[in-house]
Length: 479
Image (cartoon, rainbow, N blue to C red):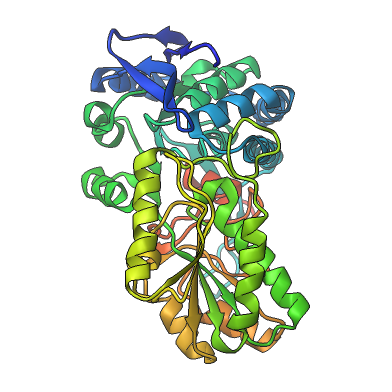
């Protein structure tokens, strides 16, 4: 087993420790692989004070260079980052490598966006009330941004918050989840090495009960960006008061398989279904959580899904040949397995289940899942492949799809453009991808959901840069 990593918080350019420590465990074996400080509200308070009193003076060129260099360093340290992603999260090595590549994209896009002027010009002589003036806009950073990040993407999710923050000359304090904090601390060091002043990115660690309130209520915070579960997101919203919040919460994303598909297309749809349900061990808010297949093609489609699920090599996450590792811990795996068998009690048929071992949850294929069962109404955050047979009526399929509390992403497999457009217009979601997984995006395109999936604020590098800034307008008396 690897040596245990004992980490410290990164506050104002210093490594800060506490006597009390939090253990970080490898989900596959439940061994302790690292410890981090049990930070308190006082640590967060100090970090926000440092952030609010620091005035970044980086030019666009300097910001772009730092972001570019951070992406390069992630590439150079890919093996180290992937090793620790696998150890603290339990996802397989292949998925960890993919995460490092996604994070590199974030820094590449942010580096490019930092170079663009984000101002606008409005001529004032446009109407009969017009004057010979021009109005200009510019974007300014805020005092401090609070970033609270989840366990499922310890590198990419933190990158999606810090890269736009750097690009806009902001100062951010990040509290990664206590389950996977090690990667965020590694990332902080990479950013400092790339030239970022340490006041612009600080990392505090600890339990939500000790440090969570300060991450929301501190008077120096102007913006809170949170990715995580619905109850915590709504709690933050209730406590944030006048502060701006970006809440990226859960998802219950459907892949809709329409009845106009040929045998070859059904095979393609099955590939998308299995990959979308099992990527990152199913621990993505945009993972496929429900496969809605129309009745008249279901009997052809389901065996293709089973065949592909059976080919997935699951097991030791550190083995480079493994294609599916663990979920975050055994309790989560137990809950998801329980939901499968609750659905079976309601009439669902379990077609493939090789058996759970602790946090190692294999891909489980369940057919004839009632569309109102807990398995597919709640967010089941694991590699379950639930198939819901739906009528050959698109209106009814949309009604079923829209019947959950979530509205994040969706995928639709159809070759009929009119139907595709009807689904794009009819699904109550933030994203609708035709012939692709619900989660497909590039790291700068707008991303976010509605309903319980979020408060409508989009992430993605470009939208986050807008959200992280205040627009100032000024006018001059020259046309």
